[in-house]
Image (cartoon, rainbow, N blue to C red; front, side):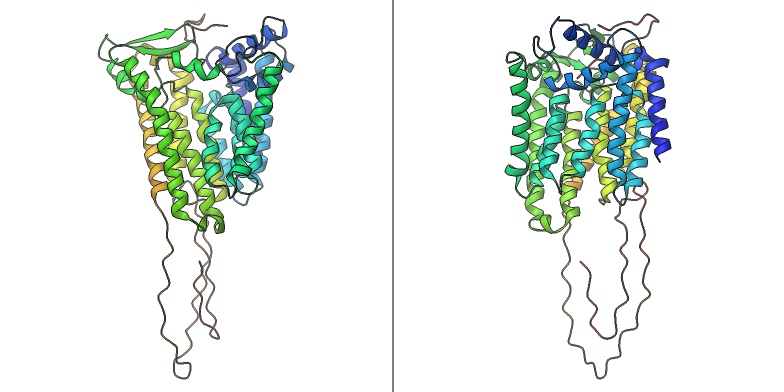
Length: 466
């Protein structure tokens, strides 16, 4: 297990640091440059200037500076080591659980299928934080809340997972809201103390100026139409260095997604509240029901952010890893379909980026169809996740039994005990079978309950998107 996990990380590092750095790890060079500007007195992003990332992102970016801030492989190698260390800590937490091997192998496979984008972006820093938070969500919700809030001040998205954590906490205001507010107060207070009061929240406004990014699920109809018409163009937005679509209806779709995202998020919040009310008091008596609410809710919020986002960068797919890995480790029922779909999403994403991204921006038919299929899979995952949350399992009441005449009725013959079956989470969706003991004859049986663009070699730079 550990050997495979470390070999996958080594392979991703080799790809990004030495083999295809311009395609896979270019964003790291941008991180290095930002930190070089700050260290050499040209201003810190988020403090002295507006920034597309929350201010907490400077911490891992600056930490990777131990490899050097000069041009070269040092910074990227240091970043790869830092991500590997964080992932090792998260994997160790997974393996401490009874089904740790299941979730651990799945995560290892997902990293391999997703490719170097799983390591060479800021998103790789928050994935182990989210894994730890979801594992602690039931026993230490305050710690989970603090971790998710720290992640949100690095890359925003983990903040959405505070919603299912809130609904799954017995004392949500004390265990979720208060820690999140405390962490946010510390971060903002520190930023303001360094003079960043004018820019600490600038990341909230930077997204509004963006157009419809080529990889976004909402862009799929235009991406396909662009194969057959010249009225829809694929253009490089040089200011933010991303590829966007320009043509009839593209800006309206971008604006519509900007409206639909908060509406969809509100609908997801309402669904989670409804689920919590339907489960009722059983939520506190049954850990799996509570785990399903929190972890499936985390998957729901993540998919809402992916499907209704006008950006849709490939590194966003890393967000899917934490809920699936934790669900498999906790043995939650019904995650087999989700786990397989997410593996497919990872493989399709790596094919699109970094290997065939020039075909996407150049209008290649085959890879464009792969991108479209990947986006449809994300939409399908969202529908599947919502349907699973709508499903409410109820315990069937036991039928009343007639009084037994012990003088004439023979004792029931004992049935052979069945062995427990551990269902492979990637092959079936059902929960593992439970061993039932043979009834005793003496008692009644009881039922159990730098800027990018065109690269020097003619390739195209990866999208630098938050």
